[in-house]
Length: 284
Image (cartoon, rainbow, N blue to C red; front, side, top):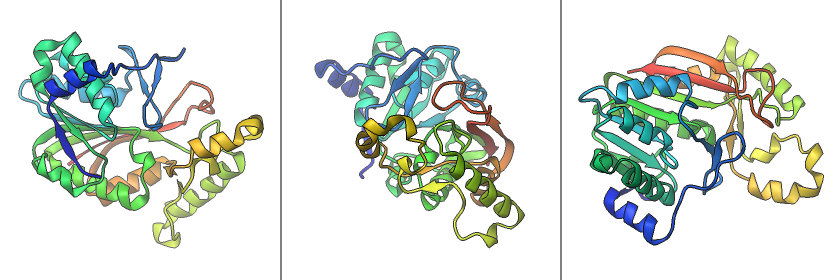
């Protein structure tokens, strides 16, 4: 896939012309993405601790920040409200970025020139055409790494490391394998694999957590009548993390870990035991 820079004014105009709008949120303030890569949380006050720390950096005078997986721009808008003046938003879905630009133009028109838009998916060396090495104070990548395989994760983290200034920070949150919709036997198997991995990563051929098809993990007992649709809808790869596994990836990419912990997703069908996601904050 190519990496393309979008002019924010033109992107906003295209969104208006083609009537592109953010879809309606569900009852728990989640808005489904257009490309079936999860949801975006909507509404002020819904941000994770890691996102709030990223926003603090974004709002500082002279700060330059990047968000990978910006979706419809909820974090972008909050950063601009708080005073951000140099915000680069990256997304795999071009229409997400057009909707993002439209939202900025309609809600904060004076801030549209503070936003840069890049259409493309990580990892990709073509990003280096638009992103200068050592230029960002902070990078946010939420709910993206779990859609990549181990090689893609390492390559993405290596790229991010190169884009950060010395001392710059990365903020990330991704799903763990402690999810309510994951088969109990798979969860138990992953626990055992992680226990081996914790003792010596060299003793396991594959880093635990990767699946070629999302539906392989899913407990489908309640959905037998929809099983064919589910298998089609959730055919993409998925990596479900443990704190020690994601820490391993970040340390391999030469990041210094500041915080790494499980976080709760208190929403069905994700809800299980308070460890449904993994948050990590690290610096270059």
